[in-house]
Length: 468
Image (cartoon, rainbow, N blue to C red; front, side, top):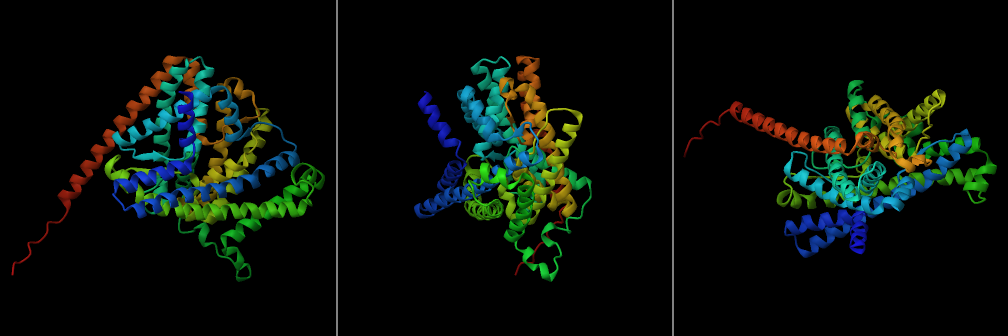
């Protein structure tokens, strides 16, 4: 049983494998030729590996920056980092987390099939992190393993169905279509960025992508150059504050600290460029293949993909969003230090991924103002929300790391507080959420039918054509 379970987890924790299997299933259902099926499956699989490779390069460049930042400004506290905290959780609650992860995917597909929320969550890595958080909360609050798996799987399926739905109204602004969704544990924060951009009434025509640049600075029209130069300035400043002794002894392996800083900035820009190439490959294959699944298994289903899927639509907004989110994180850290609370140190990777996506969403809704303020709202959320989850993580909450993205904060707060009140409260929360989903779906379906009927009634009748 454990061997079979481990095999399933190995398969479904890899987003590239999920993407490849989804593409294969969609192409088979469309009865494509063997050649087209093989080509589409392999390109979708490899495309996501290209995307993941770029993300790995970006993460590799940001990780030492986070260490250098803490040393430079002499701050100690809790660092939101999914990979670090999940490693600790899976050591003690790996079986429960794996089962919640797998059955949560099943619940997601069933909810997409039988409600109006037609989103298939395909970001397997963050779904596993979410399952790990739910597992540790329930197990730390006295649930038996089977109870944690049952109610945790339902909770997982609900979150992975609702999160893309919250972002989708803003995704339509970005993509100008309705055939792809965003599936990431930063969904709540990214959706908030769209709302903030709308409320602050920025002009979407004043896009970050249309910044008027003097002819002498024409090189800044190139996205790769903008990212490399901007990050180069940031790296150099923090490197100088941290000091050459620390950098060369702890981070660069003896390499001259200035060259190391420039190389890290260049690696960051290279990673982003690779991500953009991978996104284009994945979109080119997965959306046509997904039509087969929509037609046969889950009518009108949309793939909910990881945050880099939006980066190609407004690359400048990615950088603006990252910087705005990170700046808001610094402000939040300062507030926490001033009031004497637990300090949440900005997690660089979280601010880049969710802040960048928030910048793209905010830009589509409210232009440059929306990109800055929307991403800043996300930065504040992922600074303060982790504080709500820490008390509910048992002994894991005493570690120096925690879950980073906004969906962890919202769902962790709800499930954690319900678990603190007792098992009955968790059951009521999960069942009430399911009832709410189905009732809301029925109401939405009825409204769509009513609008369609009204449109048909008010449409002008066709004049009969004369016969010859």
